[in-house]
Image (cartoon, rainbow, N blue to C red; front, side, top):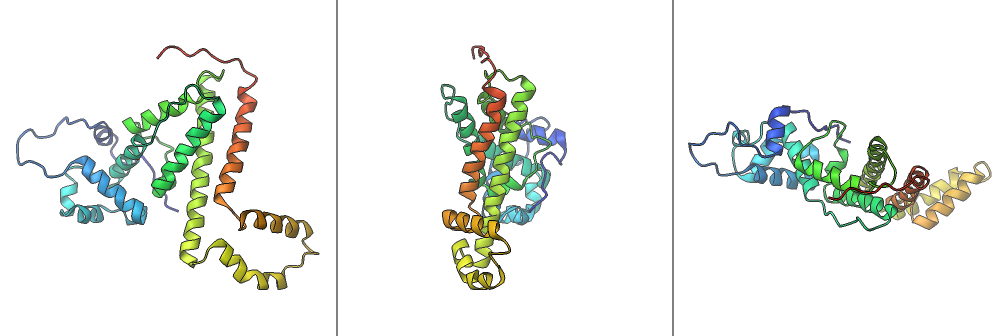
Length: 261
């Protein structure tokens, strides 16, 4: 797992790039052949295909057919580029109208949207966003996701807490799903194939009499999911429990009338 983090570059330059401010750019001189958006798109395609470990300014330059130094006239470095990539991914997330739906459906839509983001851009699940981007994509995402919890009687801090809880759950599930895919890819065996290949050995070394509960429950879970771990089932089961936990805060509170947009 990578340890990439957002907001590790120059904050002033990053914010100007995120919001596409042009203060200080030369008005005269040769016309530039690329754009910040083109650099971000090329970097995103590279990370989608090969992961963040492959993301270097040199590789992005190769993809764009320019020398590496050319990129630095658009983006100061990899740290700022990563912020731009993530914010652009946030900006492209679908945002259905969920205002009229019950709160559980609204929150489920938010969680599903983040899982879809991480499926499209697996690298995004490995980026720490403890220090937020504060770009237009990030702010639009935050505004939309908070709307799923607005008007439920929660104060502002509780709304942020609940959203953080939901997003942390989705990111954790996305990482586990990516790890399961990597295991299958690296072993060239599906989960079912791996268990079938190792079943004779396990039958010899594991004594059901010594581990009666583990043997019974493990066999039942394996039969139900086709493997010891099912990312899809873990997400569905866990999200239902997340919603149950939020209900303890929400369903005994009086709804708050939303101000007009």
